[in-house]
Amino acid sequence: MIINLIYFTYKRASLILFLIICCFSFCKLNAQQVPHYAQYMYNMQVLNPAFVGHKSDLNATLLSRGQWINVDGAPETVTFSLNTRLNSGWGIGATVIRDEIGLVDNTDLNIDVSYSVSLSDTSLLSFGVKGGIAFFNNDLASGITVDNEIYASTTGQYGNMAFGLLYTSNKYYLGLSVLNIFESPVFRLQDDIQTVQGLERGNYFLTGGTIIKISDFNEITFRPSTMIKYSPTLPLSVDLNANFNFNKKFETGISYRHQNSISAMASVIFYDRFRIGYAYENFLAAFGPNLNSHEIILRVDFDLKRNKKWIYRDCCFF
Image 1 (cartoon, rainbow, N blue to C red):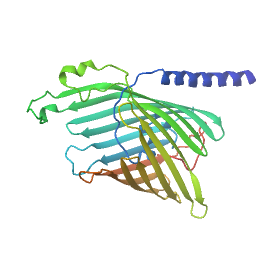
Image 2 (tube, one colour; image 1 turned 60 degrees about the vertical axis):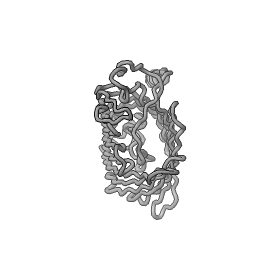
Image 3 (cartoon, rainbow, N blue to C red; image 1 turned 90 degrees about the vertical axis):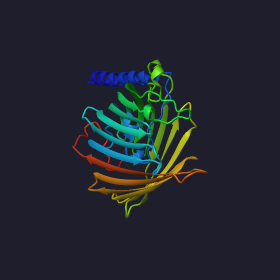
Image 4 (cartoon, helix red, strand yellow; image 1 turned 180 degrees about the horizontal axis):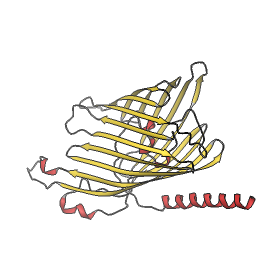
């Protein structure tokens, strides 16, 4: 029995080590923007595939965002994600992101896979991989240039891959991920659309959060969290989020993105499984029009009693 236990532990450790090596063996990554969200803390699968399967046995999330309302060509994003967890410790999911900005529309189709190892009765270490394909349409022929030159529209597809690590306990969570490893040809002209070089720069995300109980009588909890985003060609982005949950029925909060924007959000939770949320975001512009964005999220969590190798929590950080 002891030999079997040692062998089983060795197999799990070897798998995790192999996946971690694969994750960080890509030393060149690509700078490519991911869609902007205010309520990402309720759909962490989009930022880190290691979150797949952690919230519930079966989860579905739909998010719609209209950015910079009343500005022509402003970004509009619709995101749908679905994930489930298996008794063996594996999680699997899928994400679909439809993003439109100016003359460009982009549709991402991705499959997410995670694997979790129990470090103790209250903690998990998870590794996630995201892979898929994106289809784009760059309608340059409809654009207006200073010299009235007309460019040919471009369409095509390109691969997408991401990796993530996640540590969760009954006190806090900490995640690290890298998205958009493959370079995108979306904004390239027809003449050089085929010159895309693979693996140059990417988007790094460091996320973390915790739950602090404020009142036992009304079950009021404070849920601070943060997200730090780094892209080689962009300034460092830092989010500070402060959410309050009341009796697991209502949640409200505020989010501040350093020198960029401030958001207010509120959610209503029905029967511990249905969440309807709204966020209003105001861009902190020193000049120009008052830029604001609206975001709606619908989330459903189902308990299918799949907790043999998962830590059961009636209240999750994310």
